[in-house]
Length: 199
Image 1 (cartoon, helix red, strand yellow):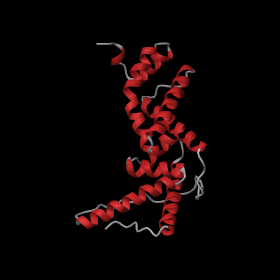
Image 2 (cartoon, one colour):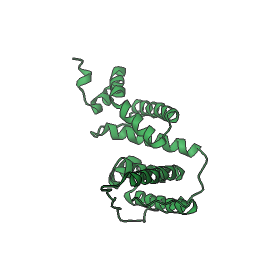
Image 3 (tube, rainbow, N blue to C red):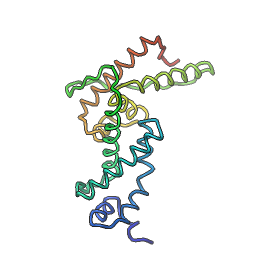
Image 4 (cartoon, rainbow, N blue to C red):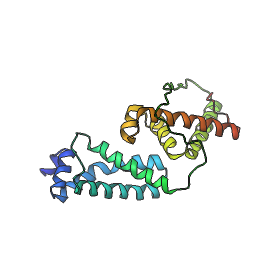
């Protein structure tokens, strides 16, 4: 068996930094599916995700070549952080949305508890599906930092601590972004007369 393939991601990154290009090929094979899935999940567009994915790995190569990686046992988290920054760079280049976009490290809100849907009739299931479609559409209208927080929290089931680590924002900032996302979603629902209660 290839000796390189037995190394951890962190060891492969160090090997690449020492000039072993094959080490990066193995790293790419190991991580590309997860990184691409993360990107496409956030941007919801395969073509855009392809561009961001390529940008992510180019940035990773540059950082490794400049020795800006320290092995901490979390190479995948390091890559997700680069992907996150590439996504934010993409959104910054897009037209800004005109919604509340306040930031604040001093905003705290209690973590919301999700309702579980028990037995429902066929009509209720259809109504709930429409509600979830409306919610997904509203999330896409949020400013990118708010949209990303909502998706990470509710679709990926990440804790605010995990979201904070991935985005590089403080937990309080993440909570603040969630708060403004909810304000914006309620406003959008009211303006469009949407019924967002699950039955």
